[in-house]
Amino acid sequence: MREIKPAPWDNSSWLEFSSYSNMQGAVGGVDEVGRGALFGPVVAAAVILPVEALSILMSDNIKDSKKLSSSRRTKLAEKITTLALDWRIGYATTAEIDELNILQATLLAMKRAVLKLKVKPELCLIDGNQLVKNLPIPQATIVKGDEISLNIAAASIMAKVWRDDLVQRLALKYPLYDLANNKGYGSQHHLLALQKYGLSPLHRRSFRPCQTILDFRF
Image 1 (cartoon, helix red, strand yellow):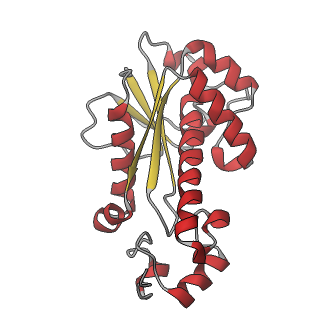
Image 2 (cartoon, helix red, strand yellow):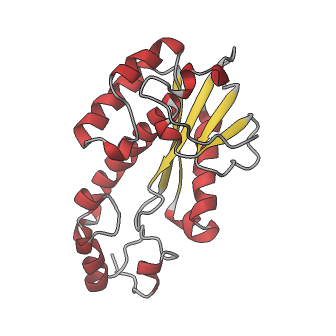
């Protein structure tokens, strides 16, 4: 299917309110988080919102999860959980990232999230410009989709909250890397810790900052 590019929407002109989405069946939004991290899985969420939820979330100023505070994301995630017809998480492990490369692992995480849905959408709106391979559901890519589609914005929030919670728990097991604060991304503290202590089992060895660093023996 064709790629949908951003248009100069105003704040009330989300895709779900445009003529494009005048569809009888459910529309799902799919987004990922953790693609640029050095540690942990890449995580995707698939979210299907009912029509009555759209105006509620729009009035809550839902947007790209990375532009929201942690507390704001958590509150919105709780609301999305209540409002959504269905939502699911899929992820690709560190080992899969190293084996497949990050792009293919990201698409795999997206596919897993969609296939877990109990409510089958008529169309999946995929954030970015890459179609998910072998997805048995019609799909369309949307560059900067979390700024255009409420379903994708909701998926962005659910994926971010789920992954942050996971890394927060993993930080207790791997306390050397300041994961509670950097969420696995390459902060200065994280990079210095890698040089000093080496790699944990959940670091991405295929990523450049990790390639020349020895394993830490946990």
